[in-house]
Image (cartoon, rainbow, N blue to C red; front, side):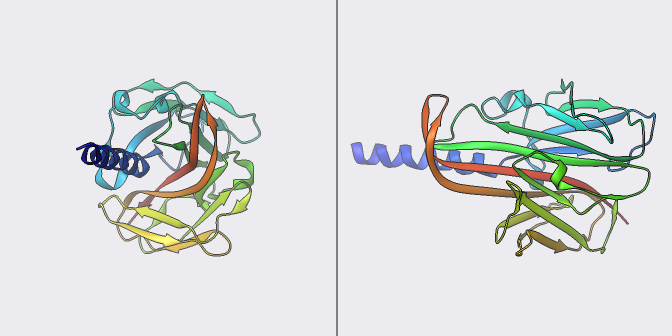
Length: 239
């Protein structure tokens, strides 16, 4: 009987950990902005592919206590105020000059998932004026993923995506691409940490990369045996 109970507990823990592992934090905002016009930013937690947007009260651990940072052209990074909207958080900023504006989140969850430490991060970029290349070297997130350019892509155009971990390309790792139609596909990064794909449907796409390593240590007084990092980037596609 004890063996049976232990097996059931193990299955439940494994199921919970797998469900958590599938969840991600992502930023949604219009890719193109205009000087002097208010620009809205939304932050969600859940599974984009299945349109599962968790109520903020149900976000894992203390993830809802994240900080949203804005890097504007020629200015120091600033923290944006966020407002709880029940199934997401909302923030605003007003562009003042042409260039690329990057929005970033990095949050290490207070609680462990089993014996795993979790770090959620996201990046979004807004271009004002001409399309521009995103310089990932200027983004401080440990794990970061983005398209090469900040622009609204066209359907059937080639989209290049790069993944960086601690300043180096993340090589031979899986990257998931989620479309607005519920379609998803997995790609493997090359020696430059790159993937390429052609979007078919218009709408918002979310790309996600993760890194899982067995590494022991102590986090908030509890021992962990593995570390998981998840990063997302979203962008728009038009016809």
